[in-house]
Amino acid sequence: MNDRDVRAPHLARLTALLADETRAACLLALLDGRAWTAGELARQVGVAASTLSEHLGKLVAGGLLAEERQGRHRYVRLADARAAQLVEDLAAYVAPMAVVRPRSLRQAGAASAMARGRTCYDHLAGRLGIAVTDALTGLGLLRQDAGFALTDAGLAWFDSAGIRLERTGRRPLARACLDWTERRPHLGGTAGALGTRATAQNTTSARPPLPASMFSNAAGMPSRPIRSVTSRPRSRRPSRTWSARTGRSFAGSQLP
Image 1 (cartoon, rainbow, N blue to C red):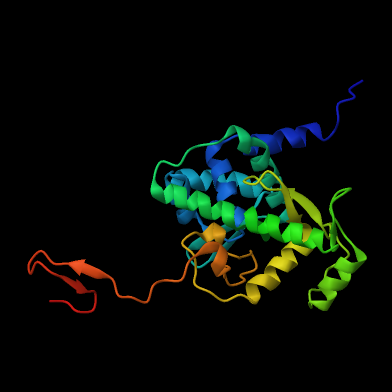
Image 2: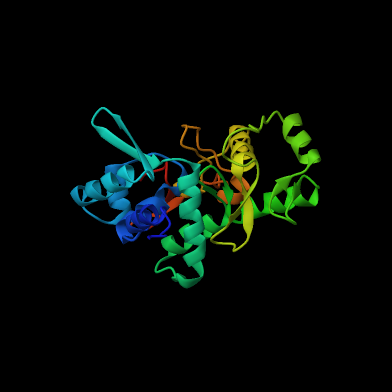
């Protein structure tokens, strides 16, 4: 008699989907919550578009990605919050073993921005996400002693802020999501997602250079970062350029 768990073949198929570096890179890129074109993903992971198309087909068929077509463009995104949570949890598990020093100033800046503040699919992550989680806990709005749970005061606070939490459905109101850069849990679940959406809608500033540092979600919410976390205001002083022809410097708007 075979007593093998009936879930075993399904788990094997899922892990086989993830056991490819190109597919893993696609899933990690899509953690920013946006829909990407196949061409954008191909450039991001460094493979030919024809090669990537086959990988995307497998991820869509496996239920990890959702596909949308608009005209000639094919867009893909993470299928849902559960798929995003799976990828984030696995990334946090392998992060201590995957420490790679940046090879350039651009890579160092990108890594720094990712650690400062980003979205984990649809909720805040990085040091910003940890700071918000700690603030909610310190104010008595969130409990962390036995998993993450909103207190009565926390539920009332969300209601008073005009954030209506869906208390039915499969997604929990509050969930501990292990942050892969900070090695500490930040607030996920419905509260984390709707809180991030409200923050983005009420924040106005210039876009930062990194898409993963933006507040965005798969529903098409405009991307608006918090300036103090992701970027510095530009100087109003005009830049100056040295002219080899005249031997003097001039402002950008004062061409010789």
